[in-house]
Picture 1 (cartoon, rainbow, N blue to C red):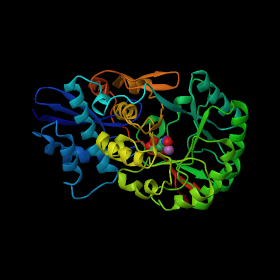
Picture 2: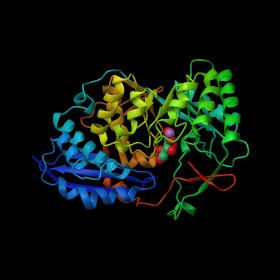
Picture 3: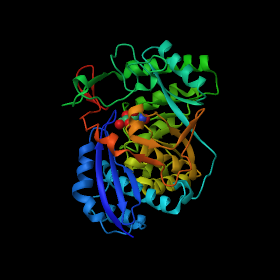
Picture 4: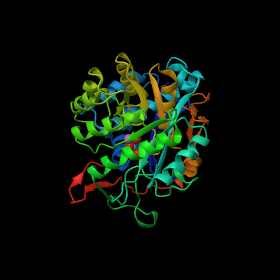
Length: 414
Ligand code: EZ4
Ligand code: CO
């Protein structure tokens, strides 16, 4: 048997997604996610214009060979666009293989290593009362781990804080913005940033959260790449009394050696890697044990095959998974993450930002959520199918992540 067609579907049911549909000569359909937030069409072109024709006639069962063909064979290696494109092909082939075997994908990855997957939710608020309401809502729903993002006095809009922090609307945080009236954006919006104000404010918020919610709730925080190494060290140290599950992206990840300084000063567990796209991006971080959790997602790291290489490498050093699960990873990419999470031994936690109703009308999922835990489900394959009619009703609408500036106008990391 062989691959007959490989079609790219770009759709915007609530937000933009790039999906690959692979069909075999005997009619088995496989789905892959290649969504790269704000750069969707670059990946769609890579898939359509450069990969699709090379897939036709290939044996769909040769997943590792196809991965190496696309990775080594392109000569130009790595990078977010390339690795998202490879990810979509890889996921689709794993989906097909598991459907043909009649088993959920996690069975082909070694079977379940646990019964359910602990997830963390996103709680945010511009001020403490709004944040506390959001946290309370999650605790009441059974969540055992919550990411805390707070507004900072003097800054109008801060990363990770929902514009609609009312109870019941707290899933609305979405960093990519369309243009006026929900139409196509022509350029990114801009946000402002002040590191000293942030460093003063965040520990005070965590102190209140610990006081109100007690010692057991797992607390996480995403610093989103904004600190210099010494500022990052100060933040990690100042949060130590509040016993974080992890502190994420304290400093831009491409400077791996910078984490040595943070590590020397603090025992706060560190997570990084959502913008990485291969195991090589982590080499120093992992071999020197400078982090505790790898944050890559299958969608951005060469699919199930790319992630398995990374997760196994991390496991040797006792480093665990904390797979990126924002709404800009499609339900197909989310399912790939959940099957890996269930199968690997070094699972840590899974990020969970539920998709909007509109997104879930287009992507029919079989993963399930119960009181703070997810399970990928028992449907053969990944367990997600795209309804192409719904997809066709929601055409691509340009949307971009914001650009960040310091208060004097200097461009800063977002
Ligand atoms: O900014 O997914 O941990 N989660 C994050 C996300 C990322 C977006 C970028 O597309 O940092 O909110
Ligand atoms: Co993050």
